[in-house]
Length: 170
Image (cartoon, rainbow, N blue to C red; front, side, top):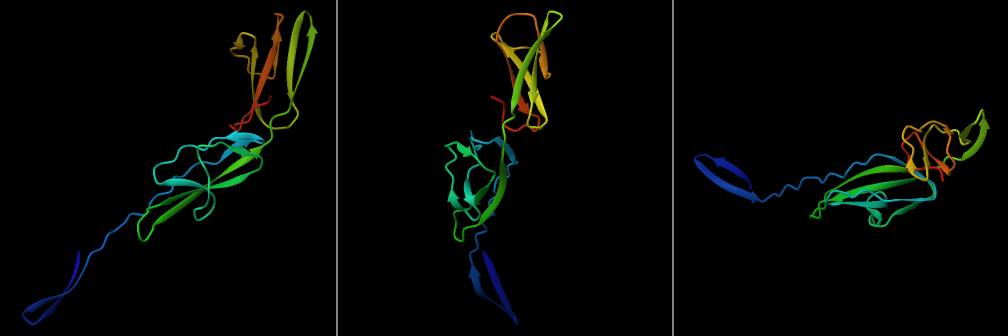
């Protein structure tokens, strides 16, 4: 409660009383940019209470955060928070989902001196990491572009972008 008091000689007179409610500005949650493989789905992270996703600034174009987004091109996502009071106080942040190409990998093999070597060659030029597997699962320590094998079987190599993008080879 705010009061204005006027002093007129010895008389004190109350001239105005106002009730003021201070509503804190809501804080739009800040999310980091992400890289996602083109053509794949991406599930938006859960937001704090009072925050919502939108496709345009100013709380326009609501996005259903319980349904994965199909990522075919780079896009800006807006996080909008509002107080829900009169007047309605708002805050906004944004982040970018960058669509990246899957690593293209060619597997080749050959035998030299009774050692069979399989090599994964990445033809798309990105910095990548490797993880080899066989029918038993992930092969511990097999994280280079090639692997020497001495047992019959089926071998595969998962190639991931070093940037941390959610995008692996087929």
